[in-house]
Amino acid sequence: MINWRAIHAGREFAPAFPQLNRCDGGMTVSLHIIEQMSPLLDAPDEATWFDAIAKLVDSWGFDRLLVAMLPRPGMRLEDAYMRSTYSPAWRQTYLEQGFAHIDPTVAHCLTHSTPLIWSPELFVTRAQRALYDGACLHGLRSGVSLPIHGPQQEVGILSVANNFKCTDAFWEQIDAVLPKLVLLRDLVIDTGRQHLHTHMQARMPQLTPRERECLKWTARGKSTWEISHILSCSEAAVNFHVKNIRAKFGVNSRRAAAVIATQLGLIDPG
Image 1 (cartoon, rainbow, N blue to C red):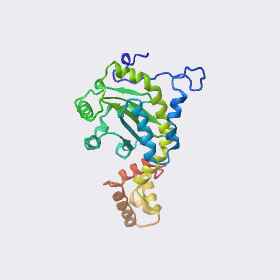
Image 2: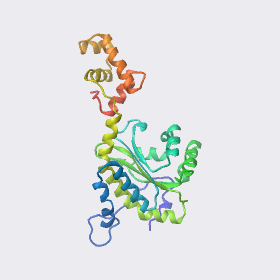
Image 3: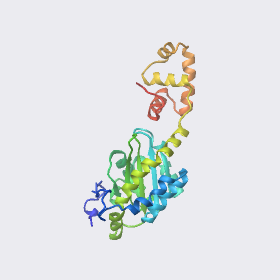
């Protein structure tokens, strides 16, 4: 058995797994486990898909699950596609307190590829300890976070948790399920892309062709006067479009709107 405690202390680790195509009975992840994950491939809708994931991790001893993804790095965390079995009250508190910006599991998953076991030692600052104390009150005492870095620039996190203390039983559980979680994470990336796309489409402001042109040239550093000449229209017309753009993005400046539009892939700043 691998002694994860000896290398844990809130750090990442990269376990080595035998090849999945072995036929000698020595596979870390058996064909039975792969078959257990088949409902993700066959799920007809998002609810069925997420329910299949939740049931799977629950059977492995984790009664809390979070899947969060963004289509590309640099986007606002608040815009992430997110589904979880966490307490709604905790989700609301987490959002209102902006905990995502101090959560060490989030920081790790945005910048690393290896799984992270989390326990009290990981939460160092006063704000992080307050975050952890609140999580414990909602059954999130220990868990594993697996970074999501997809082939199309997707970034995110798959977290599973339970209310166990870090006893020998918890570490034995981690030793047994980590290979399964890594495989599940990869399958979530492949099968969840359609749900991420649907989520982002619903959040994207609907821009007119003229508004896209104004945003594109704004992102390239052009002034109102320059844009009016490029588009052969008046400065008043440019300002009219910019006003609508700011309203659609909910921001106070055209520069902020251009940054968000670039992050969402709505414009190519060139």
